[in-house]
Length: 456
Image: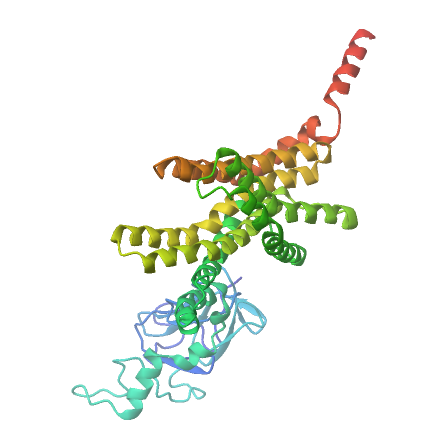
């Protein structure tokens, strides 16, 4: 990409070429005109801290700058990784001696109109930066109404904001959504008499954030249309199975009271982990049978966390209503504090806890789906590991007169989950290289090897 000089006299050594200029520069982008005075450095790019923000993906965060030399002449310089074009010609530097249209990012990118003042095509502009005076005078003069309006348009460019494509970026949309949803909850549900409402509302509010975090941790690959359909099916199945099967089994296991025996707690853990693992396993079997498609074990691990989040949201709606009843019915401050903390734990962490256990079991399910020779053993190992952690977690809350064993079990569960997110690819690679999982028989290989050694 060679330096390009705008039409006109090119710059030369000191004392030659075009004469220096002390004119202002008019820059027009997206129907908004800005005027800059000599001596300023004008930054242009996608980042919001630029003087001229160009919110297009093909434009660099710090794309270009405009500055003046010692003689006051204006120069455009491309400083970012993305190119700038004058027509179809890429340019890195343009000496502005007359109006020019530059396209940023590509030959069809957004147009930046640059007009040095005093040239025939440069119409006078009323928009000036604060402190830029149209004509010299002995002292500051009172600002006219037009100048005030112009200044406000520069400082509060609402019109430019409304047309900026940056509003469609996921992060900004997420900030808007998460800032306004709690206010909407109050407006919509303040008069509700259903005590489960705060539980499911705030659990649904938190669950997508956990899902994004799990995706970043597990790195399962792109979530395409196929994975989205599988995820939707897992969500529907989990919700139906909870209400038709899981709740009834748990009622039979816990009918003796709130304090669970170790066997009852393990039964509850197994029941709930099967609830989350079953739709993931069935989805994998259906893909293998009807489409001969295998997904990476990490994708099944991620889909397992989705099932866990769904389970946690459903459970939060049930248990947070009990916390609200305690808060409103108790006159003891310590009980009220404990109930508020329990409400927060259910809303913020319940879905996360279930997702961690489901993620562990579904990693093994993914391995079983991809390596059928040990499918039953791998699936059983994953579900039983998660069920054991889950059952011990529930049992410790009633057995110990302390929260610390419960916290230790949660910490160990998290340690296992994060360990698999770190080494999932390495574990699958080793499984792929080991005949025990791949389909060959280690026993037969040893037998044939001994036969060959005995019969050279």
